[in-house]
Length: 185
Image 1 (cartoon, one colour):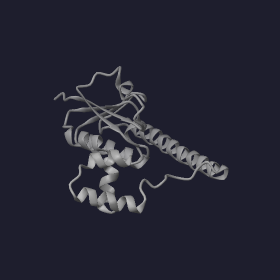
Image 2 (image 1 turned 45 degrees about the horizontal axis):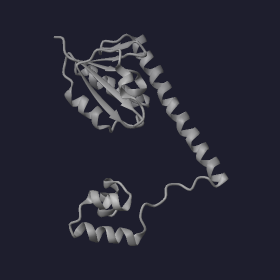
Image 3 (image 1 turned 120 degrees about the horizontal axis):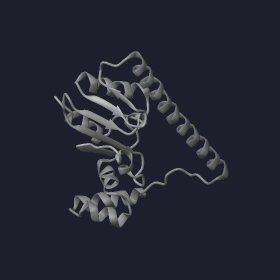
């Protein structure tokens, strides 16, 4: 039984172009996450994992787009292949079916380890950059969005029925931040 070819795309930031990842690949449907790959808690990845069926093929540009650590990568690949779903990594020219050779499994481990190593380097460079910026006095961390009296005022106005979106706009914060303040976070 020949199933669907389903693409999975992940971009880390909103200014990255998700279309580039699978532009030369024919797929029936694409799931796109705009999130970090540091963990597997991504809405479209979860939707894809629920959607795929026996006989389908999941197509991903590169292993590091699917997971940034070896354990997560192996779990996802194993989860898919045990359900009869193939997984194809375009950049690495690798396809996993569940009946893979020892060499294919070695490649998965090596390439996954490289993705994990790259993530560790990024974190290390970020920490070093923040430390240097702090030494220069150029980094103070994220400023608090609202002062306590503003939070109190925001809660009163929200409880009085004012629209959350209007409050967010007026206070210069996101709606999600409004809800966080209302929940006491």
